[in-house]
Image (cartoon, rainbow, N blue to C red; front, side, top):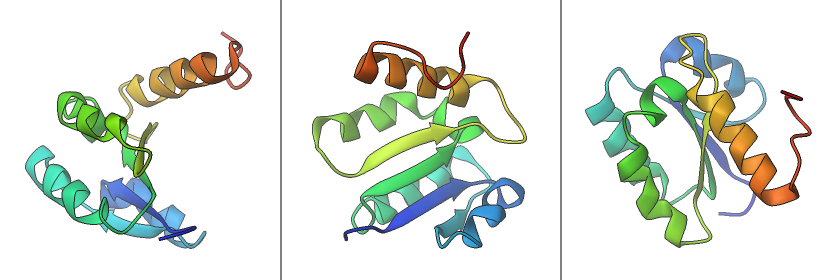
Length: 104
């Protein structure tokens, strides 16, 4: 499991990650995203999830907060809602006590 990363989201956003060696899992709706996350969470310690799926699934994703792995990180996407950026900003501030990424 060490060093493996996956990304779940819309096909247009996630394909660029494939060039960086990240395993890609395209989905089209929330139900498909939920099922894909359940499957990849067994094999990948880091799972990125595009924000248009992360925001509606935030209650479902809380169950993963109780364990060290997998780490599921919502990320901004081309169909952005702002949730991914806000999540990363909040996580950075909790971890470091300061916003070093966005400066807002």
